[in-house]
Image (cartoon, rainbow, N blue to C red; front, side, top):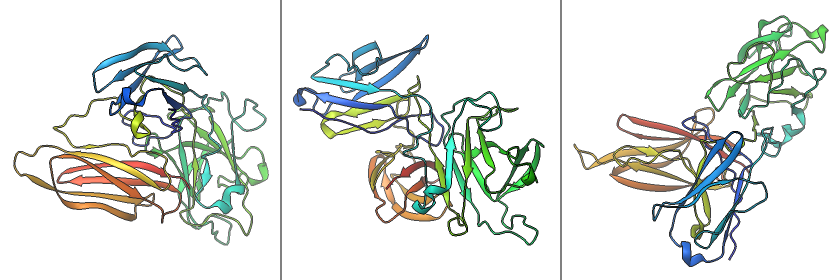
Length: 358
């Protein structure tokens, strides 16, 4: 009996946005009875550049694989009737998942990494695993050509002065304004400290200074094909396996689930990352309500919001007692994009993000 799990997964500790590496696990089960109802956890260790992994049976609390070197293309030794195969990846742009929220805008952008200084401003070039979103305002202009709906300011090169732009870029890994520049060196006649069509956006790692760059992002809009208010470009990167990654799977239930690198404390509220993530069109959200000393039940709400903060679904709004809960979310009526789900009970509030890809 063979099970193939091609669910992309990556965990970035407590960073609020959990996006995707191209590390995939294939689980090959030769005896389903041997692992039925058993849950396993894969953890990783990097020593002197060598990646190793261990597998623990959480049901029996036994280490079944201990610090085996991760070799591309090779599956693990057989354990309890099961073998796993892990395919890692190199850091780069994931062009399959990088996309606009409207398909008609897919032809209007180009995002790339280059080692050639002739392609865009800046050196050194450093590939980054950060994921970004570019959120546009309407591209209306005043009579003097300036942007009517300014969304953000950033530095322009070569002047290194702040100028105005009709979009904002968010660093999803750190949930803050991204670090980026506008390159006005390629067409000096448009060097006015205000972004123009065709001027490259230089994405940089968090806290980078000087001319350090990760990727260049260039737009080419026409009169009949340009963004409207709220249109969003999702720039998604591959994220290689690192020592913080921890994954769980239960072969008989046909899933591999990313988890935080910590044990769940039943005395605390928990809101887990949805799985699968990304999803289409359904996903599952698990959460826990702790034991209450003053009252037996608590009013609990679990709601879903779009990237602009508009509520799109209420999944839970009721009194719930202490325990573990699982809710299925069906997004078949929603468009592709990033959504936030929020768990609230009394003073406890927790948000996480998820990605719907259709």
